[in-house]
Length: 314
Image 1 (cartoon, rainbow, N blue to C red):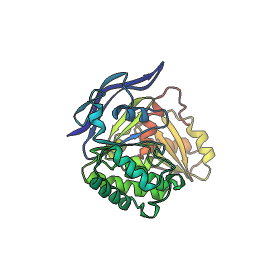
Image 2 (cartoon, helix red, strand yellow):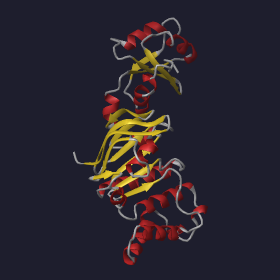
Image 3 (tube, rainbow, N blue to C red):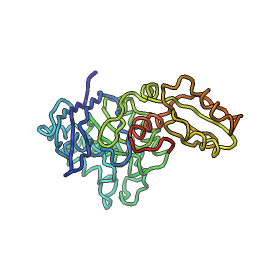
Image 4 (cartoon, rainbow, N blue to C red):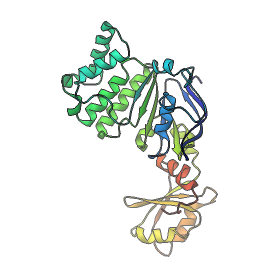
């Protein structure tokens, strides 16, 4: 496997706070690699170290064959970076923003005009070309930011929660654009806290308190989850929950509409039978069924359930 990013023991401290705690990372080329985690898990800090905006407190980083931060200027000419917050200029038009970014990248006149024309077409910005960026909608601003980040045709694109402020259709369109870039050979590292977006990644790292709690292909992570997943349907879910909190093998209970989604220890020999027996007195007609794990289940099992202070049936 050819990698675009390799990091070993990557660490970043801010005073007494360790934001990134000795992570090892390998990002394959021409794939979408995702960081999944809540705010404060270390996603943004890691991305900023990878592109040279932050100097690591410890560890080593190699990006596109270059050591960071020692060769950061070379790396910056090969990458695109889209920040979580819109970072272009509100008082410039779409065209002016793209033209200014082209000049920053040092593109000559002919290349600049060709790239701007292509990005305006590819990211559906033609009807907004002369509109000031500050008046665009969230989805339009996101498309403009992505267009700007790809002007120099980067080998590696770093996206920090790129769809956090857009609607579902714009999120979907964004991901179609990302897969088109990957098909052309671009490597993409994207951070997100949306489970459905994480499922779209070729590989995924789940971050928790600055560490990688789980890593792999989404389907593989679901297969290898350290829990048995059970769903329960019953007329009186409140009564069922009161019973479930007394079952030692249960690690987590969450309600999904008219059913309960339960994570149990994997060492239970017959979890369905065990739960039916426990519920017989409260809900004899309960439907108890083992189901496949979702990525949310993987996230809960890899993060919250490993913390000693988390209640079983939160």
